[in-house]
Image 1 (cartoon, rainbow, N blue to C red):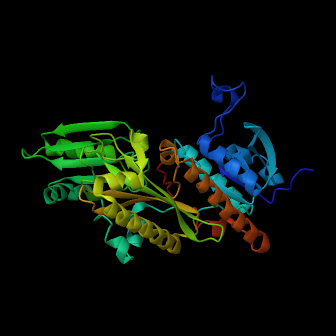
Image 2: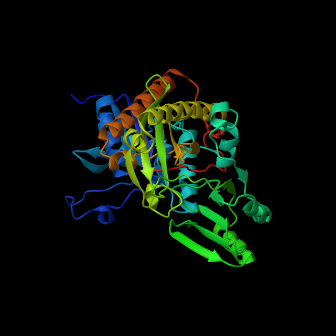
Image 3: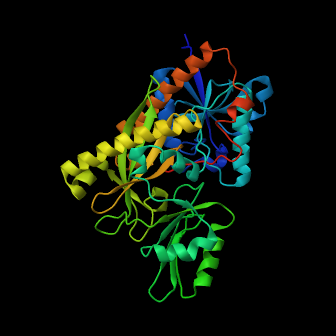
Length: 404
């Protein structure tokens, strides 16, 4: 007798692959590889244990939505196979769009599901400036937040003079270290600029003409809003940027809990530690103990955990319900701690790179246990989710935050 699944969780990705393009030489004929394939497979495995059906969908899955049906893929016999399912209980947004058009398609798909009564498993963050101002209201978090202001071109020359170590510019709605810029004025009055383009390519340029440097920054920044911060020397003794990624999630009771922490180390000469920019990973406790000693490492990790849990609560109070966050904490050589980023679509790649499969699996189990809690609560409540009350989850100017 077939077991009855108590809930279905749809995982929205930007675009489902076509079989001919997705097959690999190492796979049996017809095998598909999905975006974030490892995460999706771990979710499916956890779903089998927790009676949660995992179905992968994209915006094209909605052709049959008026009839209450969706097309997608589910994992059967370790192979992604097409399926048709009814409306899921919840949708987990893992869409990372490559273009504004695809981003709009994914947003509209989430809104269409909301209008049909399918809420998101987790909300989305507003811009980084809005989140920064909210976090400033907590005394502990305010003490470890970098001084931040909205970038204005006319203030740049003055800011460069005020910060001899340089400035760090980052998109207010950026991800994966893309579009980040370090600016520094040299002794001859020129401006050195380095960072990563929006296509995530590293660049470095020195201009002896300040006006030419400003024009370069204008091209890199474009019309998008940016934030400006003093450049913080968050590097190890070898000059490599490093940080600690903390994954916090809701548990089966709906309480915030720490799932894991891992160090990310950027390539020498890079200004970020993002894995997409060529970084590597290491066990957090082991690395911090080597760098700062066991007692200092324990104190740092305790502060990181406490700050992460407090930040999750602060953000949720201001911006709606969430299931998980990835928080990035930078460290100076003497162990000064800085809260750098809050990410509402945290990846698990860093845990994979250090061989921590237990934390990978735990992160999926906790996510689905919380999904079951929400699904059960939704079933017992007669109130439907509509486009209007879903706008708190997906405002018109929402941004996606993701860092692996």
